[in-house]
Every structure is written in structure tokens, then in C-alpha cells.
Image 1: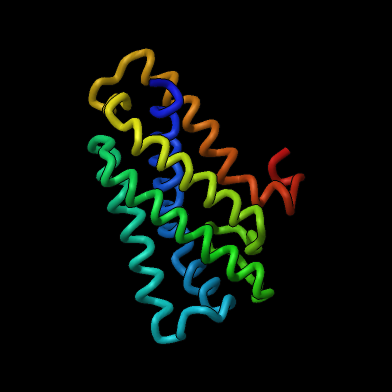
Image 2 (image 1 turned 180 degrees about the horizontal axis):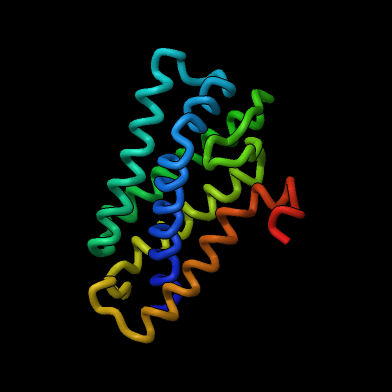
Length: 169
């Protein structure tokens, strides 16, 4: 129960952080997409809105209760991020990742973080039936949420910490 539950709530935690970052810095993702030169300029704004909407929808649905469809959707979203990050990095296009208010460059750490989140979402999707919903809050769920918040924070900060370790220390 514990690993699958932590995996599910790491996914939820990171989706909430991502949406909060997009709201806090609404121009970060569009600016990153322009810098990457992958998305046509006329599609930058719609893509940024669609990405934010997908993250928000998945977060709300996960908050309501873990399901294999929603966790599978999160796995696909994170795997897509990983593929995109890998392509941008390997093609030498560079630029910021667009995943937060900070200037985290697109690199292999961003790719790895997305792959790790996709893997966590798959684990949670496969074992969704043992993940307790937030409505059944108890001490065990509190431990799960503390572990998920810790792991989610570490995953979120990993790319920035590899560039600017003094920011995290």
C-alpha cells in the first residue's frame, strides 16, 4: 500500500505545484516554448493553455480519488514531457524548461524528472486500488502525504539544484 500510495500522491503534489507555478508565472511556459523553437509561434499560447488545463484537470481528478484512468493520463502527460525535454536537449535547442518561475534550463535532469514522474504514475495506476482517498484521512495517510510531499519537492527542485546548488542549501 505505502509505495503505490506515495507514488500517487507524489504525482498529485507535482501537478499542483506545476499549476501553481503556471499561475504564478504565466509567461514562463510560452517563453520557453518560443525559445525551444519546436511549437509554431501561432500555437504557443494554445499549447501553454492546454498543458496548464491538462495539469489542473488531472490534479482535480486525483484529488477527488485515484483512478487508473487519471493516473494513466498523468503517466502519458509526464512521458510526453520527458520525450519533449529529451528532444529539445538532444537537438541542442536549449532554453528554459518553462516548468517554473525560475530559469531552469532544459537538460537531462528535466528529462529524468519527467521520466521518474511517469514511472510513479504507472506504479500508482497499476496499484490504484490500494491507494487511500484523501477523504479517508488517518495517520497512515498522513505518513503517505508527508513522504509524497518530500519526494515531490525533491523531484521538483532537482533540475534547479543541479544548476544552482546554493539555492537549495
